[in-house]
Amino acid sequence: MKRIFLTALLILGAFFWQFTQIVRADTLKKYVSLAPSTTEILFALKLDAEIAGVSSYCNYPPEAKQKSKIGDFSRPNIEKILSLNPDYVFCTGLEQTPVINELKKQRIKVYVADPKNIEELYVSIKEIGEITGRDKAAQKLISGMREEIAQIQREVGQIPIVERPRVFVEIWHEPLTTAGKGSFLDEAITLAGGINIAHNARRAFSIFSPEAVIRSNPECIILAYMDKGEPLKIVGERLGWDNISAVKNNRVHNDIDPDILLRPGPRIVQGIKELNQRLYP
Image 1: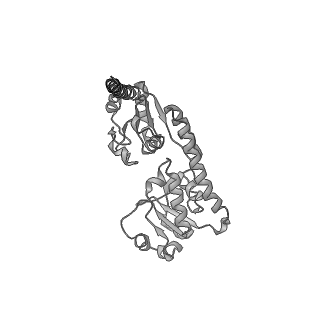
Image 2: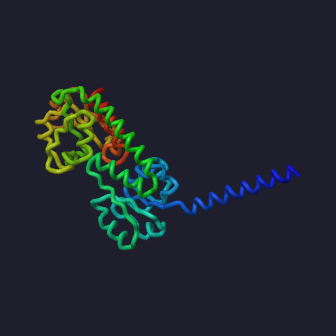
Image 3: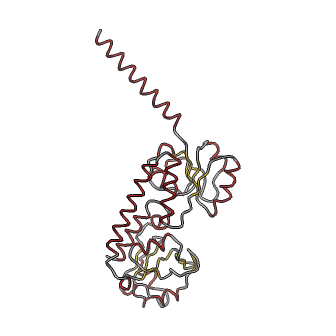
């Protein structure tokens, strides 16, 4: 009799577990992310199971590659998004504006994360946490990011500004493009302990003349596109660049993943650390 009772309990327990899994699956929220940065935030908040679709550019973490693809960054497939029946779609600004407007017409809830600096990134993370019910996880993520940056700042703060290295970050070479004031990258350089020679550029991202780089004589050059060639050779063969301090002292780097420098997501902290290591080897 006792054995029959225990068997019945096991059967009921297994049934109950399967039932709760089905209910949980039916009650999970569905989220779609149209930008690599918001995808990284959603994964950082442990929302893997709730992510129904991502853009074809969303490549981190590796699990993002397994999600249903809804098209590229600037031209996502509206029909595909609607077929996923998302509770929320997470986007960014600029070229995604037409898509955002169309989704709103379809009465899809949309959140636009378009932070211009790290403080605004914290706000985006906090608001995404509130939308998805991950308030505590968002606060924990923000606190961790703040502490890691603060640690770098404590070290950098001991170095007089006049002794901090001048930095040029080359986003692309044809035309020569860099980041100026108002960009995440400019802020990251400062937090890492460097002086961005393009800080006073007119726009956050703009074309920068080779002659201006020569005149500014940066002590460190970062190629943010990870060219497969030898970095010193890439820039050293340019007219007049062989006299730049960074070139003469072999301080030209192309080994930092551009995604951690250019995406306004949680990994910007890692980008700052990598910059700090190149500036103060």
